Image (cartoon, rainbow, N blue to C red; front, side, top):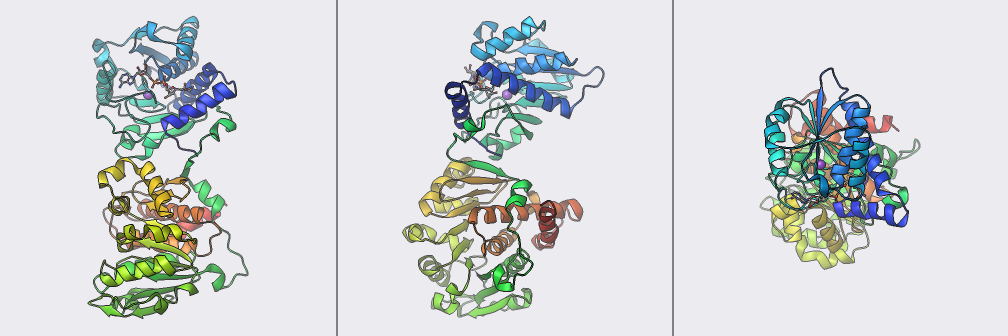
Length: 513
Ligand SMILES: NC(=O)C1=CN([C@@H]2O[C@H](COP(=O)(O)OP(=O)(O)OC[C@H]3O[C@@H](n4cnc5c(N)ncnc54)[C@H](O)[C@@H]3O)[C@@H](O)[C@H]2O)[C@@H](O)CC1
Ligand SMILES: [K+]
């Protein structure tokens, strides 16, 4: 499902109306009607149940008039409250206000006196005050209404976007409406996947307002949610007569005497994500690696210096070209040996390259070499690592997750996996997928190493990098979801427990094929 900024949505609407001749009144009818149906499915009206619809003068309010008419036609007990002057309505919103009135339905103005009623009387309060046209802090009386909604006992359902929440990457004013559910029109807006905006949305459901496919395709910089359906549709099939070489040879470089576990976790996750053959290269004194890694992994101990890779290590020692893909970083530290290795890998490794954790630290010095590479490179930063790659603060990474990922992926000529809630995968051409799995159990040390192992396992023989990486991210989150649903609690578990849920995660995708 496509995800857009407010401007992109407006551009698609404009194309449907101006170029294809679709009437704005029709789009608004579809929008309000579909939003009403979505609410009907969520809450069939019980006897005595009352609904309030709060309406502003823009097109979001126009949607509200349609929704209020549709619900009343179905017998719902609805009070419609206007927050703008009746004379201020224009265009399609005015058309639907008039239609609402001609159909015999009434409205009244919002007033401070009604606050207490709003708080207590209504089972459902629909926020159709402001949509994607909002700018900055809410002004009165919207601000006061948003405050009342925060204290309301009933469910708050926003149409398109909670009033006051920007659709893009602008800061979110604290005055914005806090919704329990948001019925978003046609495409979710990117702020639904940004912090802190996402917490204002509550549950998000998208409804089809009938924009023609031609208008939807108008949007150039494609962003889409990556769902189970996408994973099932793109997970590459494994042939019954394959041999181990057909499933790819991977090389995983990392570990140190202090951090041997990173490479163990990454190795196991890699084997559980489809790798045919895996070799782990680690500093020879990281003796715990052979002891803790699965027996299937081939071991390549390398020259070391104080527990870390020696600066004498050469990529020739690794025979990196014998592998379909090479991953480096987990637990390797930022010593001179790691620095030398990363430089050589970027400049010389021929297959697909995956760089994670400490390996990312050195990359700002190698942008030119990365730009010249012909084979794909995948980077898996968390927000702190992304801040260093992009040369910005962590706060800016959080706020400008989409645009910053795109700029950085283009500049580095790499696929960037920006980790966090709704992990974002951005390709060097700027296309983006937003992950839909995962939970707070992933916020612990080691889960990044597991993801690196999984991505390595899944890109080894991939025809295309993007679906392989997006699927690894999806399955990683799904394994964490299943672990929490079936056995663990996000408090009481370790990262390695997630690996044991990889088989059911893969099975659930494969069985849905
Ligand atoms: N053709 C379209 O563009 C369609 C748009 N639709 C709806 O239209 C919405 C966008 O409509 P509009 O562009 O009219 O914008 P809005 O309905 O979001 O409202 C814009 C109005 O809000 C006022 N405003 C802006 N910032 C404010 C603030 N901080 N405090 C108080 N008032 C503020 C502006 O003066 C303007 O009058 C979408 O979110 C969606 O709900 C749907 O009807 C489907 C079709
Ligand atoms: K709204």
